[in-house]
Amino acid sequence: MKLALFDDYRVGLVEGDSIYDVTDAVPNADLRPPVFVNTLIARWTELLPELRRARAGARAIPLANVQLLPPSPAPAQIIAAPANYHKHIAEMGALSVTPKGKTAREMGFFLKSPASLSGASRGIELPKGSSRRFDHESELAVIIGRTARNVRRADALDYVFGYTALIDVTMRIEPDGRSEERSMRKSFETFTPLGPWIVTADEVGDPGALHNQLFVNGEPRHDASTADLIVPVPELIELASSVVTLYPGDIIATGTPEGVGPIRPGDELLIRIERIGEMQLAVRETAEPLAFAFE
Ligand code: MN
Image (tube, rainbow, N blue to C red; front, top):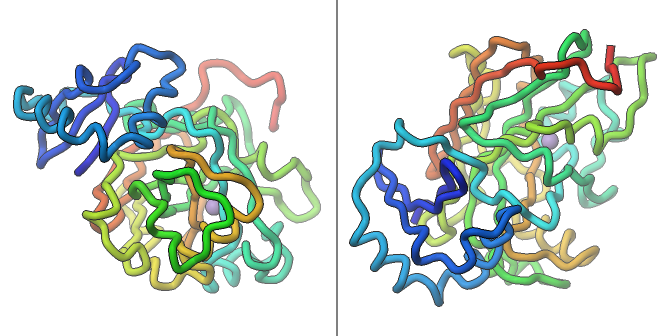
């Protein structure tokens, strides 16, 4: 199934080009911030009969008529893998803040702020007036479905609710330039577009062989496969859950392949991940310059 959030945090199931509003079957759907989505994910199997009943009684709304929001909008944490494709490590060279090809296996993860999430309807907002370089990174995102602590890799996929696409927008550090802290450089509001929906794990199967593509204004930038992940999804879950407890709704960003490049206001991004779908995003500037200037 494909779980989406739309408009004022309505809950929808996506089929083809239509979305079906099943909000009435979701407990506490009026809670804001929308932490009810984590409970929905945790209780998914139990709630399925009610969700199916609601789906049967719902009318089809064309997807083009709704505003899609990030489908896991209030995770306790977004855990992200650093360099996780060999060719990406090679292309970063001097721009890399990850020492010489070290991955999550050697140096662990970094965090992105959950407040940096965005969806197809909002797009990406770059700091107004900044002359810095902002890059796209095209990543498969794992959505955790069950509380997970010290999970072994052989069992790890049992803890996955589903998968979606994630862009890890990043303000780069130029050599000899600034040295802002990494989590912050990746955590401006809207710097973590997620979506367009979550595809449940049963419909995705093996997350280790998915085509991962990103286009800027129609021009291909990323074209890779999750088969080339250095640290695969089960091991990422094993490593992350050994450090902290993972909760339903939590997001693991699995890392970007080669092809990282700059984005500018006015650009149109398209991220497409096999068996997930595609999400189009507009890049804009914030309405006002930020207090923290990033000139
Ligand atoms: Mn990344």
